[in-house]
Image (cartoon, rainbow, N blue to C red; front, side, top):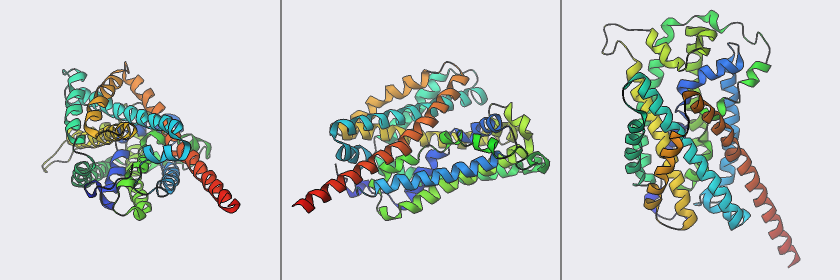
Length: 371
């Protein structure tokens, strides 16, 4: 199904914000603790850099596939390359991945909001409120979503950087030393936890079809990944420098703990954790909206129907999946699973489809020579 409507076109800047907003989500709060546990040395920041490089390479792989099929989404060109049956199976796996990721964001939002802001409120109404607001946004289609992100993303990124950098007053350089004191192996162990935080690159197999200037997709990958990685790197360095490795590993949400420990008097805000959580909720909402939209779009293209009915069909799946984890540890386990799932969607799928495209091209060439 070719995307011909001019109303569905999004700019390069909007696409950058779609990618970066998807990546900056739950990970900004959880990644420092997970890396501290996995790496076990202060060299976690090196793992962030290596994970970012891997994400860039993955992004270029994804767009190399998407650019071969102008104005077509993954749900369309996958069936074209490997056949309707196999392509539909790949599409269903992709849709389920989007539902899982969206559910994870919704559940994490509920957990953090309940723990820090609304302790006596059950988690169910917290999730339902965001689901219904998100459903309203998603029914408008890609253009309103992209415009909303273009408005909110710059504000949230700036606030994130400012709030994190203000923690430098607690920073102690000695907490980052020695560099590579236990060699490079611990650093390599820290790459795997970055898979979840970098989830969202695979959605470029959808966004490229909507871009007004798809030839600028490489620019989208560079900035869409570069901005979140810069934010993660800054956060990791300051958190380790302020809380130390041991302090980071025992905190469920290290970034919030850091912000609770510093205070600036004489300005509008003296305590910043609630302010940060509000901004963070916007990013969680952004990631959830993207996942809801992509799952709904995939179903609508598979069945050749309008988007709106599938937005409502996907809604209960998001909610019930979000309720499935029984504890916060189950939520973290779910996140780890999604991280590895993202490797299948962002690396295995493009490699498979690029191979199919090459074989298909060779067969066409063979038939042409025979004729």
